[in-house]
Structure formats: structure tokens, C-alpha cells
Figure (tube, rainbow, N blue to C red):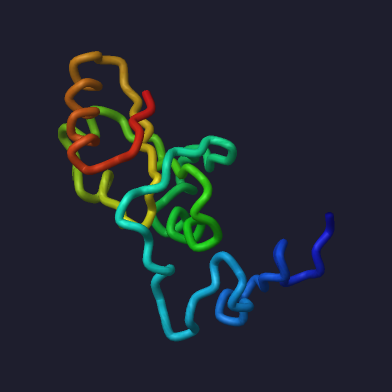
Length: 131
């Protein structure tokens, strides 16, 4: 089905400030944050996932995706195990809790480093660790 420019399915407008109250993602115009989320993260739904893409699935992009829908599993960019172990960990793994459900994708060739990096990612609170 084709929707007129500037509208989304269900009559929502592309500008969330002008969205009708019945729109799933409607929010007050003055708010710079998405609607309050439940205390429990949504179950992982893999019907639609935003794949890990280098230089694309950044924190800003994931936040934008989450404003559009809560029904998709988001991935980080691929992060190598040595980068997590020896690099700027908070910069690489930090995320906003509103991004849940969120998976981190780890890369590497050393099983010991991957195991340690996975433990660190678990401590950060990711919903899934993808190797």
C-alpha cells in the first residue's frame, strides 16, 4: 500500500509532533525523549531487525529507529573484542536504556578475548550478544 508523502500507516504523520493521539509513537511536542517505556524490556522480536552496519547503526541512528518503532531488534555496529578489551569501552558500548531491545555484535578471532568481551557486554546490559 502506498501512503501519501509525510504519512505513515495508521494515519500517523512523519512529524511525530503532529501525530494524532491514536498514533503508536505519538509524543508531546515539547518532549525531546520518546514516550516512557515499561520497566521490563520487550521480548526479543526478530520479525524485523536492523542489522549491524559499520558507520550507520550508531547511537544516534538507533535512537531514531527507536522513535519510529519499539517493535524491532536493533544491533550496534560490529565491535571487535580487542577494541573492547583495550580501547575506549564506554564510547564503544555505551547506549541509552531506551534503545532496548538491543544486541551487540562482536568480532574477533581469539576465543579467550571474545569470551571476555562478551562478559563485559553482558555487564553493560545488552539483550543479546551476537558473535
